[in-house]
Picture: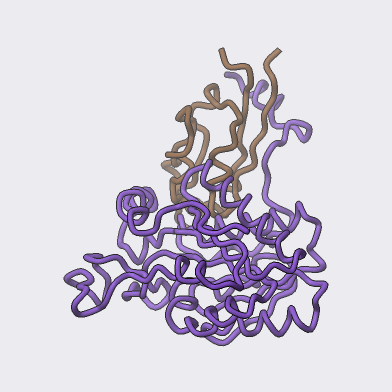
Length: 75
Length: 256
């Protein structure tokens, strides 16, 4: 089991759905939501939140800085 | 995984990455997946980490990144097409205590601004030049740039760039590295998390170099233009890996 659990918060209205975070995620947490935001983009969301380890790869490659990453050690 | 546990993780004390405070709330006009957004973010983070928000003056170019001044909360000036190094020279000489950088694309720097960048580098001005090379003119609709690869299809080379007709891709970064006025010349990219970290370190080093009176620090970032290349952002990154790095190898070219 992973030693860290993570979570991301996406600013969905500013996400442009480029899916660079989807391919950057090493644990396949992120997918594009079938729903769209106000501009019609399929925004990123955590499809498998259990798998997130808080590595922040998604946030690093995000061109629009819409991803905040949280990370907590598992006790 | 219950919702309760997620709310345990999403707390202020567990935050490891968030949008830089220097980035404004304006939504970037760039296409989805554009490398400009990543590099803007890195510049904002570097300026924030160095604590030089009040001492930094950026010069925005003409091209897609013409509106860079809308996105990073520092002082900016807007130069005529290709003339950012000339303007940066003036600002740095008048305000030697400031950190001055230009942000230019390949059309601005390698084409119309070729003379300006050559002579600014030759004079050894203490400025930072951030050069985004995506091998195409993005803003005007995907025409051939000096950096376009041989065989690459653009709006003005519909059968691919032909060396006999259009010349060869221009390796401007290698050219500038030969000039004695440059102290740090590097080529990076920004497609993977590791590459983004390396690029950030390069930009940070470039900003620190301007305090040392050693000359121009030049950071090229090989990027994608998925709209101009007519690909999805993910495919554009793959295409860049397969084709761009052969002609534009990554790494430090000069570091003195």
